[in-house]
Amino acid sequence: MKRYAVLFVFVMLIFVATTAGAQSIPEPSGQYSIARHGSFAVCLNPAANFAAESCSASGVLVYPVTDIAVGSITYASGSGCGTDTEVFSALPPSALPSTLGPETVVVKVTNYSSTTGIGTASYTAYSGGSCNGASFDSSGATEIASATLQFVVTEGGKQVEITFTQATNPTSSFGSVSLFDTDLKQTPHSRSTD
Image (cartoon, rainbow, N blue to C red; front, top):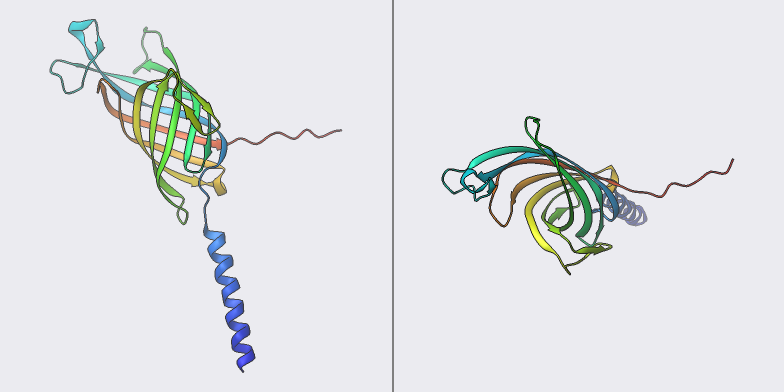
């Protein structure tokens, strides 16, 4: 009887270890593509040639814009660094031309649950600077925006769905924000020989 009890405990330990490992969702790691879309409001001062103005200032014009971007980011050990190119356009579309803006982005995970795959992160966008993998070189960089993110990791770490929960910039000229990213893990294409 003692022999069966030991065998039962051993089998249960293996089952628990296997089940716990199967439920662990890894944090993003490696290189991912970035695809962003959404909109936000920017506050402008009509008396100063429509320059960006703090949204708390009186008399500002709240101007809605769409934001789409593509790029890539590398994640490692809870940090990410990447580059993307954003296109801003008037909302609704108008005769005004779109604005193109390259940026370097830095992401730092602030909280993550490997059981649910859900986490939060800080996000900072720069004009200038460069990435060395997931590390950021701030030489020549100027901060242009910062945000907090909520994300969920799916497909066993191959896909990250991100929503911006708050965003600001140095002039405090951002109003409401509705932005969503999908990051997909990039894998090398293997050529088959025919």
